[in-house]
Image 1 (tube, rainbow, N blue to C red):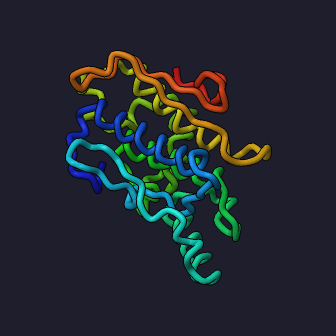
Image 2: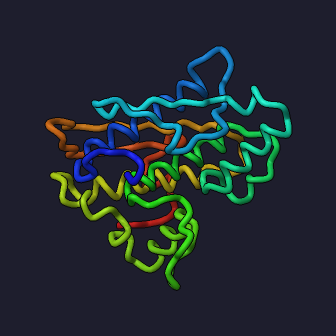
Length: 216
């Protein structure tokens, strides 16, 4: 990714980072006595060790600031593209807003692009999730992936499934049934930098059921 120094040609690295962030976020939401909302989840707050194991930092900082400064921090996160436009002005954050931010980070990993494109072309949206939705509708989704990813020893289907899971994070924001439904990753044949099969569930459903956007 543009801020992380790693070999983007290795899909296994992308998968490792994605799984680690999702598991860390799930621990904050469900693994403690009281759920902890990150509130400012973005790629700059993901630290990597030399084995590309991710660590989530700066969680819950909005709770330590005075109300005015805390709200300013939350709005800044939204302005950087990590919060749903309709939720930017909300004074409170919940698991739903963290899940949305996770989806944006997954798209960054897959495309190598920043959440906000300050100089979009005529046929592009400045906001990364919207730009990819448009690419799906125009049947050019394969063109938006980082080309180095497709050079990895991994099937195109696996890349598309991870993309579906990222888009499912945005579907969660559009539902009014509450915050914090589980996102689960699973992998088979994860060996020597190769992911032969990637599957995921969202809200207990298969990826194809969770996301209404068809990419195959």
